[in-house]
Amino acid sequence: MALHEKISSILATEPLGSKVTVKGWVRTFRSNRFVAVNDGTTLQSIQAVVDYEREDEALLAKLSPGAAVSISGEVVESQGKGQRVEIMAESIEVHGTSDPERYPLQPKKHSLEFLREIAHLRFRTNTFGAIFRIRHTLSFAIHKFFHDRAFYYLHTPIITASDAEGAGEMFRVTTLPAGDPPRREDGTVDFTKDFFQQETNLTVSGQLEAELGALALSRVYTFGPTFRAENSNTSRHLAEFWMIEPEVAFANLKDNQDLAEEMLKYLIKEVLAAHPEDLQFLNDRLQQEESQKPAHQRSSMGLIEKLEFCVAEDFERLTYTEAIRILQNSKPNKKKKFQFVIEDWGADLQSEHERYLVEKHCKKPVILTDYPTQIKSFYMRLNDDQKTVGAMDVLFPGIGEIIGGSQREERLDVLERRMAEMNIPQEELSWFLDIRRFGTCPHAGFGLGFERMVQFVTGMSNIRDVIPFPRTPGNVSF
Ligand code: ATP
Ligand code: MN
Image 1 (cartoon, rainbow, N blue to C red):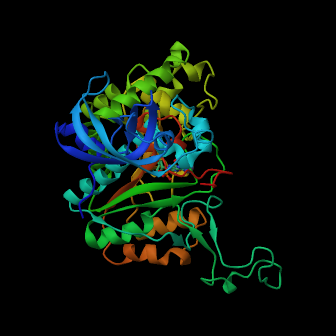
Image 2 (image 1 turned 180 degrees about the horizontal axis):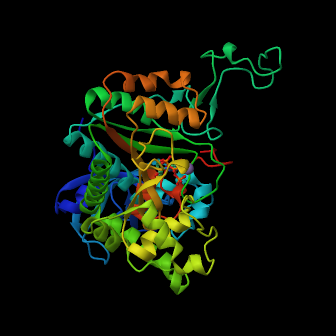
């Protein structure tokens, strides 16, 4: 099938003198003469010049913002400013009109909050066009990165019976009637009557399943939807997000850090190479947003500069213990400016601490390792000191934690002991323990929050603006 021309290719190749047909949506129609048409393939709209003396008035009336059109004509050099080529319209077809009184996207700047309320139309704006083109490139680059390094893409289940990561944050999956579920004698819900004959939830991570794949295929990764019923209305949390989780057999914590750093740099480079125009646009919108802030809150680097900086610099690698010392001696801690003042070793790090380390102290991405056992998951490998585990978090400027990972506990006896200490029932996870029983080996992996990556690369401050249909507490309409 021969598709019509993409506006991006016409603007890139400037085929002067040739006849083209473009199809897209009207952005503006000025002076009864100039139609700007955008088809989402590039930030730029193409200008079509209409001969209003020849065209039917009824047709011209339909060329309002939002209308879907096909326009054919010759590509000519533009007489006006702002574009090098334009189309002399010879035939115009309006597929779908858009009532100018009711179309909410006017040719002016809309607030992101407003656009979130009409999220089904956000795609039609310059900002969201740029974001979703970049989101695509990032997801494609993730597959390419792993494919080129002999990782297999593993699809892990969305419905799971295990609650491995911590109770209370999961969405239940059930076919039992909500109003009147079958009950046991003691009044509790009888889940043996449910579809799976037990309680099930939406997955919070594909890691445990990915470990099984890695201990046979050597290197695997997941890239799928992840669900967390965290009732936190932050700018970095969604109830439904996408996560990338590589898992590597015969790898230790150092290998894991190297892989994470290499991957993040690769992804940033791919976007820099593929989207100069979209990035420049986002760079400028961020600069404008920043200029509204008080001086001390402004970021010292522009978006593109920051991306190039992250590719060029080695990430700082620190242990949790070193980080705690830095934080204890920091100004905001001494002056009690942190909401959570760091008292002792063992304290969990909050986003304010992570961002201090990255943005104020190290001034570059940081990989923190070897956290206290108590604040990390049961499956992380116990270090020889018996009080820390081989965990790693990658912290990014403006974002805080972008990756969480670890070397996994491959020793059956140590893992069983840790699970007992943390009251995790072993029967439920016998399938997970089995790979420690049959051919266990050192292995490591991590989880990258896809939307946090898109946030970082696009400079968007709210995670809701980098996913097409955000799900957050109370928001699920579209
Ligand atoms: P945080 O402390 O920021 O809530 P976490 O420790 O719960 O993160 P992990 O369980 O390690 O995160 O998950 C791995 C990665 O998934 C995180 O580094 C982050 O990038 C991303 N992530 C976690 N929770 C969310 C969420 N609710 N929305 C979007 N991304 C998330
Ligand atoms: Mn969390």
